[in-house]
Length: 455
Ligand code: PFF
Image: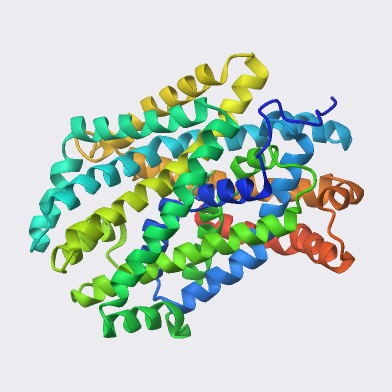
C-alpha cells in the first residue's frame, strides 16, 4: 500500500496554525477541571513536580512519535498505520491500533460533551448572579437541579455537540483552524485576567503558589506518581490518534521536535495558570482544595459568590472552560471523520453529522448517569464512570504504548530519522532511547496499575 504525499483534507496554513490547533486539543477539561483537582487531592507541589517530569520524559517523546507517524502517513490513523506497516514490512494488523484510537476519541467525546454542556449552563447561571452569597447547600442544590434534570442536561449536551459538528464539517482550514485562531488567544487572555483577579486575594495567592510549587515529598505516594503519569497522557491528547491526524495536515518543512516542545510547554503553562486562578479563591473562602469532581461546579461557584465581581469573573471562568472543551472536542471527532471521508467517500459534512450524532446518542448514557440512570451500575461504576475508566485508564495507555512501540521498534531507524529531521544526532538518540525503553516501561507500569494488577 502506498501512502499519499498530501492529505486530501488539506494542510494547516502555517506552523503557528498547527501549534494553535494541537494546543487547542491538549488544553481542555483536563487542564482546567482535572489537573487542579488531582493536584489538590494528591498534595500539590511534589505531585506537580512528578507531573512535569512525566510530561518531559513520556509525553514529549510520545507526542513526537504521534506527529511523525501522522505526517508520514498523511491519512486517518487506520489507513496511516496500514500503509506505514506495509512500507516497513510489518503486519497489517497494526491498523487496529488506528481503530482503538478512533473508538477512544468517539467514547471520550460522548461524555466530554455532557460535561462541557454543564459548563455552558454554568456560564449563564454564574453571570445571572445566582451564586451571590450562596451557601454550600445552595451551591449543591443548584448543581443538582441541573444534573438531576435529564432534559436540561440533554439540551446543553446537544448544543455543545452541534457546535462541534459545525466546526468539523467546515474542514481543516475553514473549520478547525479558524476556530482555534479565535478561541486560543481569547482563552489565554481570559486565563491571565482570572489569574490577575486571583492575585488580588494577596496572602491566599501566595498560599496557592506555595501549594502548587513547594514540593512536600512526604505527601507523594506511589499511587500519585502513577496518576501523574496517566494524566500526562490525557492532558496532551496522546494515545488515540488525535495528534496523529493533526500531524497528517502538517507541512514537511515544520520541525516536529520544536512543535512538540511548544505544545507541551503551552499545555503545562495553562494547567499551572488554571491552578493559580482556582486555588487562591478556594483558600480565600476557607475551602478545601481536594473536593474532587465538584471542585469546579460546587466549590468554585461558592468562592465566586463571596467575592467582589464574582458573577462576572465566574462567567469568564466558565466561558474559558467551554472554549477549552470546544477546541479539544473537534480533535476527538476528527480522526473518525477523516476515516469516513477517506474510506467511504462521503462529504465532510455528512461524516461530521454521522459521527457527531452517534457520539451524541452514546452521550445519553452519561446524561442519564447523573439522574434516572444513577443506579445503572456495571463493574461497580455508573455508565459515565465506566466510559471514563475504559478510555482514560485502558484505551489511552494501550494506544500510547503501541504507538511508541510502532515508532521505536517497527519503523526503521532511517524512516524516523528522516521524518523527524533533527539536526543534532544526540537529540535523535535521546528520543530513540526514550521511545524504545524509558517511555514504554513507564507506560506499562501505569497501565498495570490502572487495571489493578500492580500497586
Ligand atoms: N487533552 C484534553 C484535555 O486535557 O481535556 C482531552 C483530550 C482531547 C484527550 C483530545 C484526547 C484527545 F484526543
